Image (cartoon, rainbow, N blue to C red; front, side, top):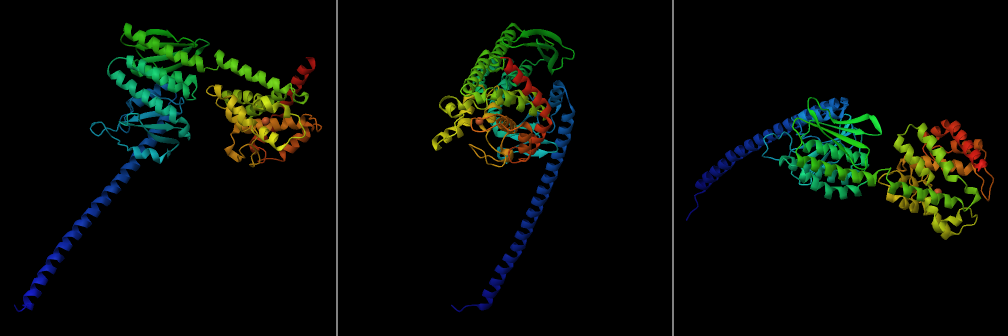
Length: 491
Ligand SMILES: [Fe+2]
């Protein structure tokens, strides 16, 4: 059959026309889609910025609240941005809050939906605050942890996980109008808590805030028998009656519970056993517990035993303690930090115990012996581990007391701010006492010579700021060292 070239051409034109028209349709469709997507991402961006702005304003407001009760009341009312259900967890009073953000798609009240992926993005900053997204144990919801200062979230990980699991259990328990689940949950959570280095005082506060939520109490006040004027208001009772006063066993605390409706007998028993559990934890982990104090006495006695090995080391630890404590005070560190620096300074060479102690004044040390000496900060840190939940700074102080700011120390060769401040204070104190004390192989320096030597090593030995504080503390140090010498002379 002859080929009708005209017909083919017409057909071809038809096809081209068809393709052309559809191309334009497709092009218009793609352009429309692109336009819609751009608008959407623009809208999302604006919405996100508005939300951040709102959060920022709210956080600034929160920062102005001072009473714990006020903060809690405010968090309870705060339902627009994040569904803050009770904000039951206070990691540090006035500094850190955990809010619950509902993440259930069917919940009509959802205003924020967060994805677990956001947790990996880590710490964010909104104004003066830092915040983290935290997954809950059940993954049903996410929490927002808000803190006034940057936090090493890794070091709180264990606590946060346990606390959130506990909080969720208490939430479901309160929905069932009973607190028995809370009490049961506390037993398993308690053992986990024990493994996490957290102060007993904060633990008790955490437990009480759970109680407040579970009992639907209108007010809870925690009073300390030893400090009658210092009551902790977990929630200020406005119009409710005092229902019951609980004495928390093994602690100096009395808990007053306010509610409109009387406590049932069952509730009273539950609260009692719940507080007993909190109290037993308090006893085992409190600084005043016999177990902790006996262990500390044993360590102090061991230090004395090491010092007795050499006449050159008599009162060495006590002198280092005097210098370090004075410097810590000049730096306006907290009472807790000063206390731990004092203990850490006294125990800094506890790792010399055992085989190492006979090297203490030796002039000739071989390589193997030198390795053993270089290992004593690590041995010491292991020895204080059993009490590190009460005194968390001891292990770092002892472990790093031979590190030098310029990286020339041992055993890790840490540099600059990688060396904890507390360890640097003790390192400087030991350096000074070492320099002004006689040794078998050299005469002592005069205090003035030693001070000059230290001043010439700003940011080499320790942070220059610590050296300045040391120079400011010299009067107090001199006075206390003289008193010690006099005491020694009267022995
Ligand atoms: Fe040492």
